[in-house]
Image (cartoon, rainbow, N blue to C red; front, side, top):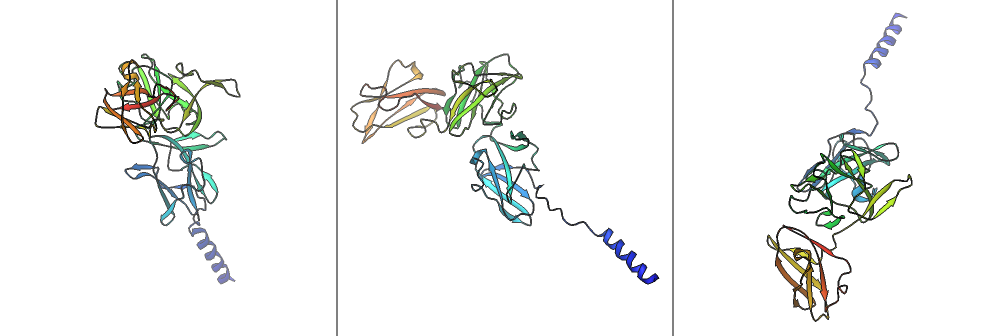
Length: 310
């Protein structure tokens, strides 16, 4: 009897001292995203048969950016992201979760949070000092959309909108010597609502006449995202020079007009087959311009185009 009791107690003791089984939760983190020359590295540690990264940069797709195992339970993916603030989640075997290794989060609008990764120079890039001489409505430029706001006395100005889950910290603007605050943000195609947050006060963009009212009765400014309109027809030449090119088959004369001289006179362009081109030396800055074909302002472009000269 004593022998049976001894073995029973020994078995109970060994069971109590045995290590607990590994937690089956998939939410154990590796390290937060790290951006290098090849892209942004996302890491996740957890037992799963399939893990992927879904975020604002891929339309929250569950197929666009699958992760690969890099040893043990560690998963990795390298994704090339444009400069700016991006929200994301991991999807492990169908379960959505924020990155447990990344403390930067934003409200996901449904009671949870999305993880946030910022790529490039802070939250988006600021237009270099001196290039933005006056506040104006948002413009598509190389790298995204240029937002600008004039307030020399403000201590902090940020752009909050539907593209960053209305965060007051994700896209902080920078002020130049003229008191103009600016930021270039990469925005996806389509319309986006936004406001400026000036020292904690939310305002619509005073330079933008496009306003909508949301379901709660609040007015928001509206901006369209997508590629810069001049991305395929004008490019940078050597420093301080701007190369203008446009396809105009059948044209007899093509000129380019722009804000660099107050639209006071056009510059004639040379022809090479169906392409017309010219190069001008301009001071660093952001300029609007338009092509004129045979005296017609709208033959090649209905809206003004934009070019940034460095």
